[in-house]
Structures are given as structure tokens and as C-alpha cells.
Length: 149
Image (cartoon, rainbow, N blue to C red; front, side, top):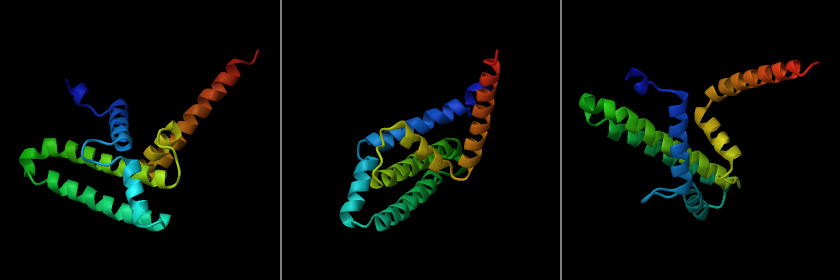
């Protein structure tokens, strides 16, 4: 039972994939990342101005989400924390994907999805990629060594 409650890499990946799919494809009542990007581009054609305005507004929304989910106090804390994390993750992923769309990237590709996740991780992404690179390099070396006759 405890193991079901544990936060695993698989659960985090599943949450990220869910949020990315909702951000790119949209949810009822909310614009998709592409629609969000297009609405900012219509207001002001300058990409830098559009991106800065988008970031300011999305960060305000993420902060408001945290405030609203915390209104219930200690009683709703077990429910509020996952709800806050999920909503902030969705808002941030949609913002990053909208910026990528403004930059001309195709949000349906796996490369862009991976880069959006990397942006979401911030500085921790360097460590994750470094660790992944070390593991891949080690596995590749072992594979090459095993092929030596």
C-alpha cells in the first residue's frame, strides 16, 4: 500500500505526459498552447514582447492557482498540494509550449516535448541530462567492448 503512494519516475512521467497532451491539444474552456501563442502574436507582432507578456501573465496565473488551492487551510492540504502541483505544471508546460510555437517549433514532435520538459526542470535538467549521458556512455562502452572478438 505504501508503495502505491510513493512518487516514482513513472508517475512523474505520466503526469508530465498528461499535462503536455492537455497543453498542446487544449481542454474545454482553455486555449491550447498554439491558440495561446497566436492570441499573443495578434496583440503585438514582436516575438520578444509577446514572450515577455506571456511569461508575466502565466506566472501570475500560477501564483493565483497556488493561493486558491491553499485557501482551504490544513484540512484540504492533502488534496490541495497535488491539485496545486498539477495546475502549476499544466500552466507552465502550456506557457513553454506556447513560447516554442512562437519560435516556429512543431509541438507534436518528441524532440520539442523533451525540450519543454527540460525547460520545466530548469537547472536540474543539466544534472538529469549529465546523468543520462553518463549512463548512455557507459552502456555504449560496454556494448562496444562486448563486441570485441
